[in-house]
Amino acid sequence: MTDNKIGTLPAQYIKQMITDGEILNSEEKNIQPASIDLSVSEEGYRMKGTFLPKKSESIRDIIKSESIYRINLENPLEKNGVYLIKLNEKLNLLKDKFAFTSSKSSIGRIDLQTRLVIDGYSRFDGVPCNYEGELWLQIIPKSFLIKLNIGDKLNQIRFFNGEAKISNNKIKEIYEKYKLLFDESQNLIPADEELTKNNRNNIVMSIELNGREDNQIIGYKNLLVDQIIDLSKINYYDANEFFEPIFSPKKGKLVLEKDSFYIFYTKEFIRIPKEFSSEMVAYDISNGEFRSHYAGFFDPGFGYGQDGELKGRQAVLEVRSYDSNFVFRDGQPICQMSFENLIEPAEFVYGQEIGSNYAHQDGPRLSKYFKK
Image 1 (cartoon, rainbow, N blue to C red):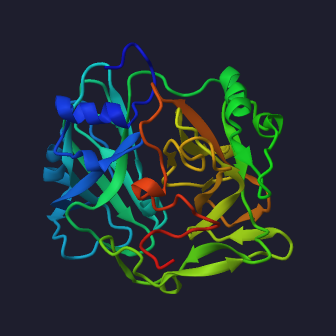
Image 2 (cartoon, one colour; image 1 turned 120 degrees about the horizontal axis):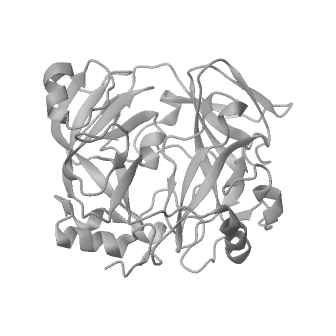
């Protein structure tokens, strides 16, 4: 069905993969514009620690030696515990397709770390060509206790049939054609401003710490509380019981405390045309040991709409500082957006029409589990 086109597979191709038996135990309703959601089963284990399998070693072999006990989903997952949950879906990939996974945005925003692991593959979040077998999710709650339910969707998987990333000599052309980045006044940011900061094939984005006249909240920091988040409860929790708001600092700089979790947002408004998908990647590790995202995938149509009628949305940042306290200044570069070719435009796009939770996010939007 790919007709020799190379890139990321959009929704219509993923639908065909279900029909052809390459994706098992899933339904069309789980398909997003360029990905499909994965769901948890009732089978899960508390593990001694994080791990990766050796070549030819199965996950179930590791469970026999490295699990502590089988969990009951009626009980919440403890903070900093390492858990392994079998996903309902299985794969039977053909030789021309491989895959990568990432946490869903709602999961990253509650500081719940998830990594895919599979039989005989010593890398997180990847699935090689010809893979046939089960999918498992390593889960580590970092800030809150988590109540899982059968069918909860924590991760999404994307499929490729070859190199999809936009090369350095193409990104400026795409930027000029589709007008990818705007400022808060909806003015286009010139391409040279964002594409020459690092001499790479990605678009640089920076952190917003100034706030707005009508809202001086520029982020949130997790509270050190033993609160449970039940993933079946949408628009349910009072955010004040889980997070404290951060207000715009007077001098445009803010100290992030080591090992705390923060929600911020970007100065720039980005949009993803329906011909592409995008992924948020680290800006530059030499600029500091912090992580700016846990759910870095952006579907076609984010901030763009069906026909380019939108002038971007700010990206939400999920930030942790690891080595020490870290000082951020307003406008400091914090992440990059890499773009990927779809083999053809997605038949539907990210937005309110398909129930996308963050189609109209404004500022440091918390996860869908919290009251708006």
